[in-house]
Image (spheres, rainbow, N blue to C red):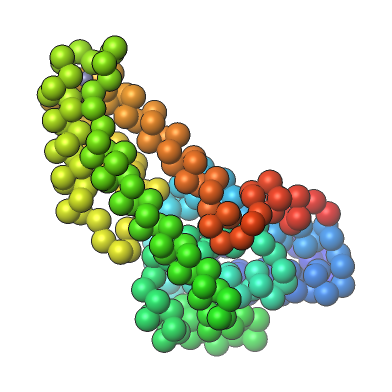
Length: 251
Ligand SMILES: [Zn+2]
């Protein structure tokens, strides 16, 4: 086991099963550095930073389909069940965030092509009772975030008194128009973090809103996204990202 190749890749499902094997063995035999290395590798996709999460989503939108599988190639249920099996917590918040985009009925049915693959290293494809609760908490958080963003953050936004170049009214109307469009475009599978950046892009194309108002909107959205991300572990547990890093990334 000590001769195991130390660089992992995740370009297919087989790579994931290989990594799952390493993680199980290194956990069972207390090979701390190898376990940490495997966890670090998983965090490249199931990130503890917003930047890492954004990169993963970007990659998922751009990546080719390999053997009928799309990036990230592994179903989040398998990541979650592996994490529970080997007691890794740092990948759980982003995995549950991603999983909460899937309808619960599909998760319970467990017949997604990524879930029915046969392999001796495959984690369970069934969601556990405890994780159903976590899924619901995350699902609700996601919807609260979307509604808060559409109704309050954008819906009640007014032009900046000091910096607006349009005497405010046209810019405030621009925000109201954006809120109206946003309220019609989301659904229960919308990922708010991505959706917020789409709102920024949309406003940046609206010439009726002045540049300083567009810029301050962008900056405020970026701050809001960071707050939402920082809160992700707290939604499903009492731990913060720093607690999880201390637990899982120091060997
Ligand atoms: Zn303005």
